[in-house]
Length: 329
Image (cartoon, rainbow, N blue to C red; front, top):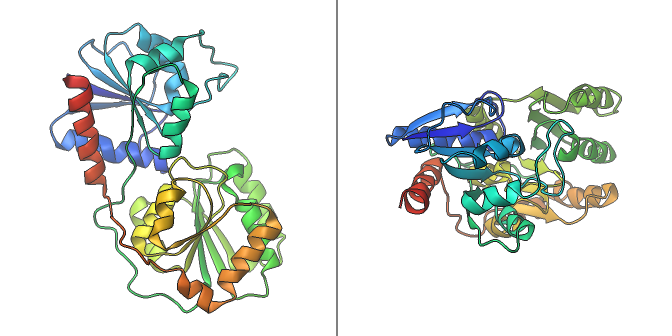
């Protein structure tokens, strides 16, 4: 029996979903499973009826109809729940009822509680075999030993796409130019064609251009180092099913300023996250100034509860157990 993983493009891309896939597949291989990654989800002829197929939500639409004709066991790994009301592309068409049938016969794994609620809303009449299995952090992730008196060294780790809030963040910091701050931004520059170039042009015209440094993505192991030397992570993404970067910041002991998304009910108990409910520019500026301009407010943004750290070995172990309990038995 082979576990086949259907993804989109090379497996070594850096984003929350790809990292999740990477760590889980590595764990399954380490404990003895035969694992194969497929970056072309249309080549399914090598899959045997006794095999297991894990399908990333990025390729769910393009592989759904073929998977329904196969006897293999299927796992739908939904980092983001696809919109079942429409096709993601004019080049991909799918027959009515196909997704419903595939969801009904599959083990569904989502990576955040918001996604679990969403997938159940999509198919209210189905008794879904669905479970939430949240991401982890590397076992060697280090925690800050001390904090600055004020939030001057700002950090943003988000792939360059319009919904991640880069433009809004830069606009707010321009309005806060009377404060002492620098910002380092890291992310994949190729997610949304042309966006990074447009963003760089916008930054070059800012009065604070010399205080904002936009860089390409960095290796996952280097993210922890950036968090250790920063004072505040700013995360203005409109939507996250989980928000791995916030989990990593919490594990690093790095305070966070974020829009209320991505597992906020749990992350909020850490004592490290200041959530806002409105992405209006004036509101973001006001709330961010409260933290950056007032050291006592920043000092209060500290862990004040025991944070149960979960690493990728825990995630891999739980994923393997799911396969054993819900597919093999």
